[in-house]
Image 1: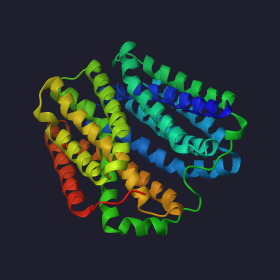
Image 2: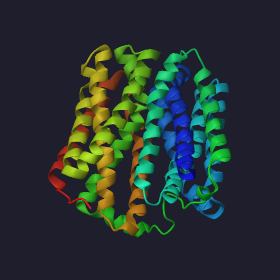
Image 3: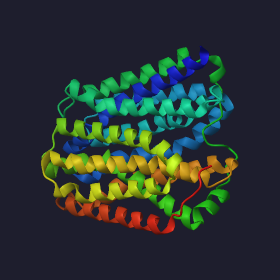
Image 4: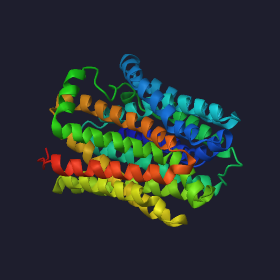
Amino acid sequence: MPRVTSLFVLSLAASLLMIGVGMIVAIMPERVYAASGNLQSVSLIASVFAVSYLLAQLPAGILSDRFGARVFLVLGYGVCGLSGLVFFFSPSADGILFGRLIQGIGEAPIWALGPALLSRAYAQSKGRAIGLYNAAIHAGLTLGPLAGLAIGASGDSNLPFLIFAALCFAGGLAIFLLLPEETRHAEPALSGKADPRALLRVMTEGRHAVLFSGVLLYGACYGIFVSVLPISLTLLNGFGGQETGILFFLFYAAISLSQVVAGPLSDRHGRRGFLIGGMALAALGFGTVFFVPGLWALGPLFLASLGLGAFCVASIADLSEAVQPDLRGTVSGGYYLFWAIGYFAGPQVIGLFGAGAQETGYAVLGLVLAGQTLAMLFFLGARKQT
């Protein structure tokens, strides 16, 4: 059936890409640190991606609205494949960071336009379709580090970068050849009618301002996880390539699991408990991670990952329920704007502490997250689900 094919093709392409992403993020921090010798360069792994990803979203949406989404999805996968080749052939930290800049441009249309195509192809069951699409993404991210370990992903091998490039090109080819005609022209994920003034009004309300600050911290934690945290664990807990692969596997698996569980439970019992509980778990995990020796540090980080996933799904749903349907695209745009700002800034702040003060940096992060938890506890009232 065409509709089954649409979901299958888009999910297959996204999972291929994310398997590759999961493979390379496990070795990229070590590679950049070995080439540069400083944590500030490692922090840029997340930051340069966030900048290009954010700047590319709106142009991709406008152009896809005019020329159709399919061509920009194919181009997105192709650009991601090009970034993999840059990673593979680059001998320097600057070259790898340039590849991350290219990767951010490529991933922008993939994240934005995949759900838009599914919304059109599955008008009566778009939630189910997009849920399965997101599940495919997280499955790829979870399997990626394991695949990297299986092929010997270490600081001495460039092979994961080449495999990443091949998986990206394969995903683009699948979209180009197999996507049915009726799903090839869809609206961008963010409405062109979005009113920045409406977003500003929502953001300045007390409850929403607290939530958006939590979204910024969620983005910061995500950026820290995929950039400076592996190096911190290498310096302080003796982690190597294998341990880093396990870290990324647990990170993505925990975020995926907690969203699958917390989403329907928050529908039934309300968002507030999952918002506060998720942030509290993140505070506990980051605040205590370097008080735990060796591999035992994975325990607090697993708890932090569960908390981040629960906060993510509950906050998206809560902010969507806060506005009328014609403003939900605007609020979604604001959500990912704040996420990207945090994703950019978080690793930079941790990098400022330097290699000799990493325990202090993460303890401060834990305290900030605890402060955010208290703010939500006092300012977030229960909201009736709609």
